Amino acid sequence: NINEILQEEIIALSNSPWASSVVLAAEKDGSLRFCIDYRTLNAVTIRDAYPIPRIDDTLDALEEVKFIST
Image (tube, rainbow, N blue to C red; front, side, top):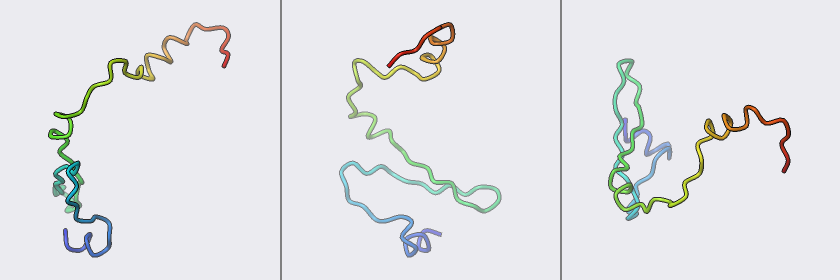
């Protein structure tokens, strides 16, 4: 339960303006799944104009390459 994981210092209380809501969802086997709601943070996040390429796209582009240099 919440009090146990607070006492074990697995989680801590926070008053940060960047904190996101956390929900511990009960699984069928009784274990807890840690879920975070990032919708508020995502709403104020400025998107990068030049995002990092996806790794699978990069690896696909290298599929036919004969030489790789750094």
